[in-house]
Image (cartoon, rainbow, N blue to C red; front, side, top):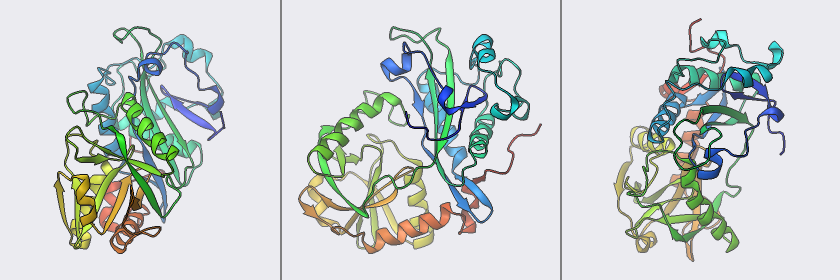
Amino acid sequence: MQKLADFIWLNGEVIPFEESRVHILNHSLHYGSGVFEGIRCYETDKGPAVFRLNDHIKRLFRSADVMQMDLRRSLPADLESREKRERDSSTRSSEKSLGMTEAGGNDGWSEAEIVEATLEIVRKNNLAECYIRPLVFYGSKMGLDPAGSEINIMIAAWPWGKYLSKEAVKVKISDFTRIHPKSSVMTAKISGHYANSILASTDAKNNGFDEALLLDYRGNIAEGPGENVFFVKDNQLFTPNKGSILPGITRASIIEIAQRELGMRVKEKDIKSDEIKDFSEAFFVGTAVEVNAIGQINDLKLTGEKEGEVTKKIRELYLDIVHGKVKTYDKWLNLVTEKTLQK
């Protein structure tokens, strides 16, 4: 595949990008049993900083727990395979800086260690701004029951610009329904969930749209394939209730800053598709998409090819916050140059 960066962090080691391999008979590859996060790092006047890293890693661990992956007790990789991948110190992670043992941390991983590993891989790749993908996955085992399979964790970071290319996108209400909340744990970010997203997104694009919007099993608006959604009316924000959505970290950030900084009322409610005509604006939010206007849903035009005034105000404020320009929200930023663990 295309080389996106120089290094990847895998089970306590920093290895060359092109040497990151797993066996083809991999449980998570075959059954979608991995869990992951999407995180962004932004350039600030103090250097690169990762947005809401602690919250993302907390959710990663919660998602792992849902899939019966006890990261705190796992053996990241067997010693023999690690020894085969050893490289000189310029291409390996400093296990000592993470408090690891030679065997890769036999006591498992703490959230703080994975936070530091995330910062480390950004530093190692010398990235000022990037997208970060931690992934926890089972090893080589066939059959649905993953019991006995090793648990692996990798962290990749690479430059990734605007997720949706247009200022305001055209969206299709999907014929595919969002996963029923009794079918899975909707608060977990599980790889297998995204088959539903892929079907909806590719169908929308095949029909001339930029993205999809999924309804839940009751016919209420749920979310995009990889985004939460907000609607605007009379300087108020409306967003779908939790239950059939992944309640995103960016979603929570937007709710907080809209209320605190812009004095807006935000209401979480069931929203039917026939209510869309009553709104003046709509926009997607998420780590990858950030804040992106929705100009049209099916045949209904909202703001057309341009973003609306409220969406613009929220997007600009959000970008100021992630770039460290609003000091109130420095608490949401982990500077890449700062160590989070003591030696």
